[in-house]
Image (cartoon, rainbow, N blue to C red; front, side):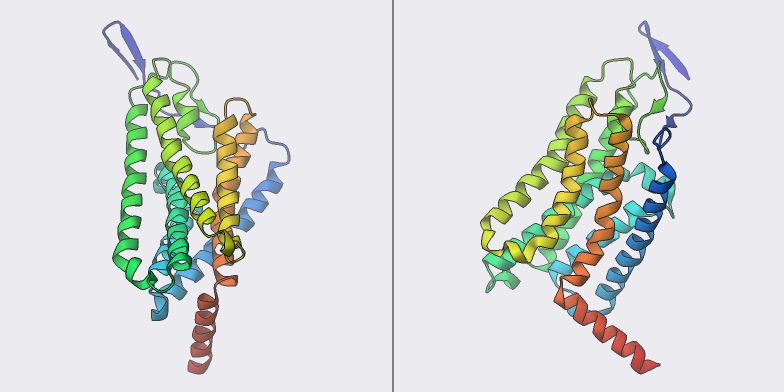
Length: 283
């Protein structure tokens, strides 16, 4: 559709074409990899959510944050509701980063104030943090969508990504995209800069306990390094490289989260043993 006013022609295409993985060599093997990762993500995250829900001993503030992380990961890697996931994919990306902040906060408080942990970190505090971060992520998404509606797309309608990525999309605009650029920079600071700075700073405070935090640190590295590489060199790297890096940042953390929290968390392993024992006894 085309709208005229004040000698400016605004072009609003009826649709956009997402390039996806077209043109990437041997992509069928990568699809097999993504399928395998997706199955592990769904099974693993569902299992962790069930264990936390059924075991009343896992109702501590820490496991509220873990439950929210697995819930976010399940949505971000799931294709059961593709339209909803497609619209709010940026929201889920942001929540993955914010969840890592909540877990870092919990870990720091537990290590630095072991005797006062229960008093300082309450269920209300963790739920408030999670609610605030959900609200922030959704607000950023809605602002990004609102800014895109002011653009005129009179050139290409092909988005060089595998979803409606904000950066490649606003760069297709023909009119002034300065507000979009400023907001994108602000969003990068809020979604990547602040969480990464907080996590690095928090672990600097508990450097002696690094060995107990290797699992969480590996998740941070996998998520942030891939995404930061994309946004730092997004204009110079090949679109295919950008797509691959973003997809890795999307699928690997949701698969690794349940593995790390099951294998490295004694409480969850003990809970699994109790649940399996109850199932066997009932049979």
